Length: 112
Image (cartoon, rainbow, N blue to C red; front, side, top):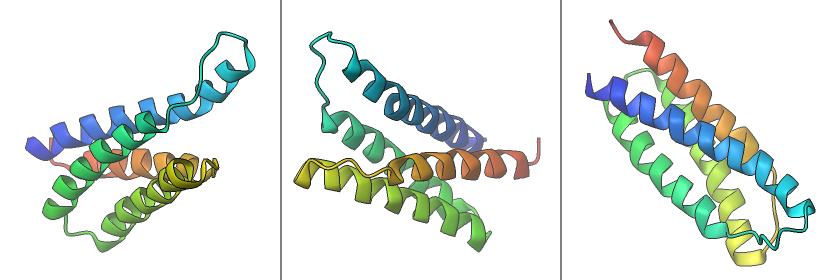
């Protein structure tokens, strides 16, 4: 049951992250005085890291573990590039999509 809850949290956080990453640049075009804050991306990364660590401890499927950790690595590279170099790398979209896919697959693999 705990893993199902972690998958639900992971799916929710990854979807919110993906929405944030897609919608926020569009909001920057509108002159509302909004500026990009990379610490929001860092918060999503930290939530994702805790959930991925917890989920991958319990699953035996190596391909699924690889998908989770690779997705988290893609997000990490993008967030760190933004924090350190102030450069936006679109790897964050692939990472978020990978986390969503991994959590959905893991959720469907549970015995209900």
